[in-house]
Image (cartoon, rainbow, N blue to C red; front, side, top):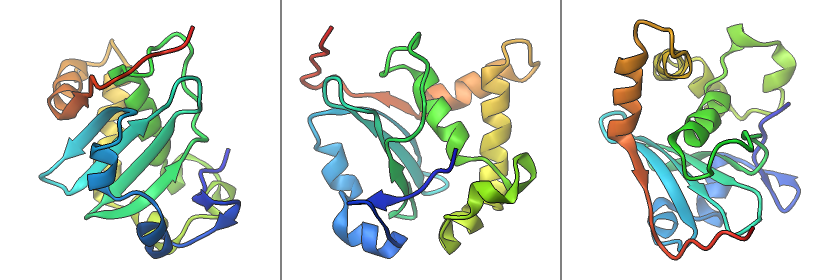
Length: 162
């Protein structure tokens, strides 16, 4: 599965998306904002937005610039879309590194996305994610605390269709 930035079926650059897509302020005022992971000490943030039965949309910002966005990441139907497990699953896919998979995965990555995938920040987040997902890890509680202190759930007009 390739994670690609797509806008109106046209690949575009991070700069173009910054001008064409929502910025962080607009996302925070979106009535369908579900949850976020915000890491102010590192200047990156992840937002999940969903409207009723529409696909889950994600927006990942680094230093105020939109680095990844889309609705192409699979989530478990057993998890509530507003759960910390769902947002860490999305983050897992955004933290895949070159050593984790073959080069084909990164073929449509922009220069900025490739830089992110090889950064120490991405590596550290991937360690936290692995420990968070593994209940038997001796670092699981540290990872759980790390994510819960940065996790925010937005209780705005959410009406889920059944």
